[in-house]
Amino acid sequence: DTGVSQNPRHKITKRGQNVTFRCDPISEHNRLYWYRQTLGQGPEFLTYFQNEAQLEKSRLLSDRFSAERPKGSFSTLEIQRTEQGDSAMYLCASSLGRGPEAFFGQGTRLTVV
Amino acid sequence: GQNIDQPTEMTATEGAIVQINCTYQTSGFNGLFWYQQHAGEAPTFLSYNVLDGLEEKGRFSSFLSRSKGYSYLLLKELQMKDSASYLCAVRAGGGNKLTFGTGTQLKVEL
Image (cartoon, rainbow over all chains, first blue to last red; front, top):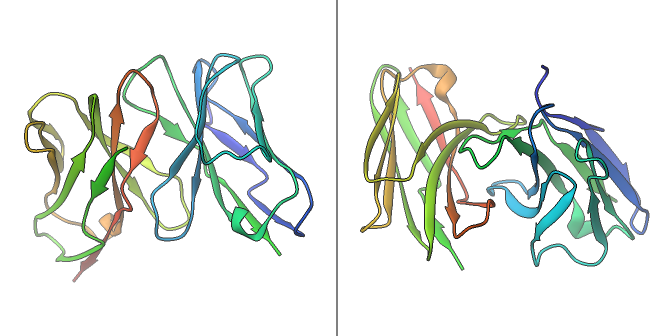
């Protein structure tokens, strides 16, 4: 098992474009989380899936953001009409059940120019 | 909402002991977590406390006092590779999301 995998690792996009990120969690993990982290800050929760169901969504997640986990395995996070304020590291994490340990991926660093 | 406070930066000497404090205010507390994050890398899980007391794991220990809304992470026999950001995070209610502090940047010097 190679851990949580995210791609791309880096994405530079022009303002107004749409971007999509992918997260492949650890294979037997049924819970998947998306967080966003800016420089000098801790990760901020965006959304959470249990299997394919999106059970919780932060108020930080505007209607330009959408996340899916269609078969309860990998997940995608799409940002439409990107803005400069969307520039951040987008982190995915997964866990087994409600266990305390969540494993984070390396993140996708988004730069909106 | 939740409020988590931890110092922004700390400096310590190789071989020494350092204590990183975290205070929090939340309702429905359901666990406190410590993560380590090296620059440009993913956070990695260090410890979890849900009951009062000390949890020890090798060179790392974490303490929790729920009545005081207080935790600390204790690092012993510091090594240069321990230079990193240490993130305190709280889980509350029946949900699963973690609310993180801003992190404490620890610098270990010779």
